[in-house]
Each structure stands twice: as C-alpha cells, then as structure tokens.
Image 1 (cartoon, helix red, strand yellow):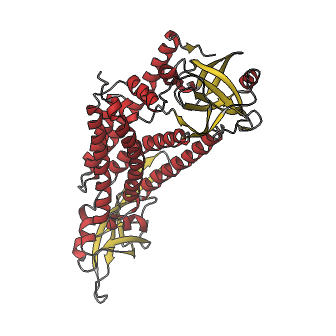
Image 2: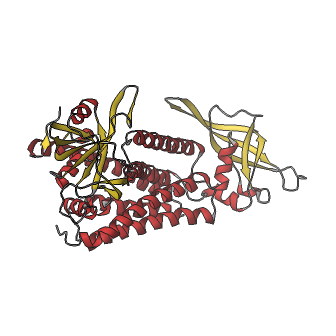
Image 3: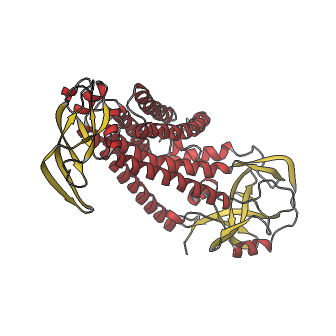
Length: 467
C-alpha cells in the first residue's frame, strides 16, 4: 500500500483521532440518554438524529483522511509516529529530560476505546427495540390530550396464559367505563387488551389512558401506571428495556472507573527526574508474550536481560523501535504498586537517546538485576522534556481498512435507526443485526490478531518465547 502521504497527514490524523474519540463518546452518551429517558418531542428527535449525523460526519472525515494518506500500512504509520517524537540529533547518550509528559494518554485512550466499543454494541440494540413515536391507538389518544386514570374493571374475557421460565403472564381483554368529560354523564364503555401478571379481576382497578374529550378513540391500559404513561408520552422504550440498558450503562461506567484507577496505580513511574533515580544503559532487544499477555518488552543491560511491563502492544514497540538505546530509570524505594495479591512491580521508564520514552514497571527479580548495574546519579537536563511514544495516537491511519468500513457502516445504520419513523419490524432487524454483526467481527479481530501474534512470536528474531 502507499504510505507517502503519512508524514503530510499524520498531524491532522492525530488531532482528528483524538477529537473524534472524545466527541464520539460524548455523542453516543447523549444519544442513548435522550433515547432512554426523554419523552417524545421535537427536541428528542433533534438530539438523537443530530448526534447520529455528527458521528457519521466524523466517520466520513476519517475515511477521507485515510484516502488522502494513500491507505497506509500500519507499520509505516508507527514509524512516522516514532519519527514525530524523536529528536533530530546524533542519537548518542545524552542528559535525561527533567519532565516526562503524556503517559496519561495511555490510560484515557484505553478507557475511550473500551467505552466506545461497548456503546457501539448497546446503541443499535437500544434504537432497534425502541419506538421513536407512539403508534396506533396510543398515538391517537396522546394527540387528543390523553390522561391516565385508575378505573375499576367491569368485565374480563379472552384470558390467555403465557408460560415462560420465570412463571406465567396473562393476556386479557378488559372492559372499563371512561368518565364523561364534564363529569355529568354516565361515561362510555371501552375495551383494551393488555398483559397482566395475574388474570384481571372484576372490581379491581387498572390504569387506563384515554382522551376525555374524545372517548370514542377508546383506551389503552395496564396494571402499571408508568407503562400506560410511557405509551402516551412516547418514550422510546418500556420500563423493562430501560432498566436493562440503564443497568448495563451504569455497569460500564463503573468498569471504566475501576480500570482507570487500576491503570493509574500501574503507572507509578518517575514523571519528574531530579537526578537521584537509579539509571542504567539499556537496549530494546525483543518482547515476551502475545495475545492477552502482550505486555513485556525485553531490555538488554550489561548484567543481562530484564523485562519491562508496558501498557501497550509489545510487538509494535519492538517492530518500530527495536534495538533503540537509552536509559532505564526507576526509584527503588518508591513508586511500587500492586494489590495484596500482586503483581508487585516498581514503576520504571525507558528513556531513549532519541528523546521519547515508554513507561512501565519492573518485577522484583528484574529490579534487583537492574540495580546491580545501575548508577546512583544521573545527568538531568532541567529544561528537557521527554515525549511519550504512543503508537495508538495515529489510530485513524493504522486500523485495518475493513474496520474503518465497519465504523462507517455502523454510523450510517445509526442514522437510519435515529430517524423518527415508526416501523418496529425493520427497526428491530437492523438494530439486532448491527449488534450481532459487531460482536462477530470483534471476535474475528481478536482471534485473527492472536493467531498472527503467535505466528510472529514463533518466527520473529526479535521476539522471545513466552514462559
């Protein structure tokens, strides 16, 4: 593939990727919140459809930027990213920079990817099973100024029992008398069919929605007032679906916070160097681990190899900047992390001679090995600033073309589902199909990436076999 356009468009791709990631997560949050909790109104239609359209604009912009870059292969993007954060010098040993900034991007980027991926699965399902506007009798009653009243049951007929795993429900046709609008007449009898946890009983009260000024429109009803109110108000989803999806949403936010806080614990490396850290010359020589265990970079020291646990794909680091030389920096008696059961590692950072750095941690056995060759004092440039080597910052150019096409198709499907047009059958097919398709493609990516990593680990000269 062509890659000549990467340096020219890399800055725009990084900026658009960062803005798109944050804004997309905000948009899907607003979209889902409006869909779940707002009643039918022009404002809800504007918010839902507007968010979907803006998501599509971002996806089309990303697709166009990739085309302008010549659809580069990922390796060329990673090399351009490394060149972007490297100093134009002789590359020899130099004083360490006093500040190491930007590592928090590894945490925020990971949280955004996780949140965005799960929301991409939830959103089309929510849009597909919901209804953008009241339909049928409920729509007519709502348009005529419908109200909800508790009225006594006068008769019950056509009772059908529906058995399921959690018990049974009953579909009944119920007759009630709708009060006259002026409260002076005898009212008008009306029938409705609804689902009840137990068969409706004559004399008990049920909640009925009707139009006082137009009783001829009939009625809708249920034993739950909130469900009748939802039918008239035009909320997109019933209480059951709202509860399920809202609970999944809250669980997702809790998982994000847990992962983020845990990740911060795992990034306790020296961020400001004062010169009293332990420093040893090191060279990136390979990696150990693949798939879900791809977090160990091998460094060669004068005393032998050590492993630095990093927070990104180790193979990408080695393929891009393998054999890079620099300093391994850590503070032995601080920046330790790990829970009661571990893993207990000392926060450390590899600072290259080119000016970029990779944060991580040293396991106790490797920290002891590195300490034997370390200097107690380091030369620090008080005005210097190290730049994080973040190989994911150019994700708009490095993700597979097929994934970009999937993202574009997803946004277009979201726009279709966000249209305020009723039609439960096709909406459900599109929504569920989109969610299932994303799940299948996601599993395919995981399996194929893991298989490729295993093949590469077995054949690459830079990789070290896992233990």
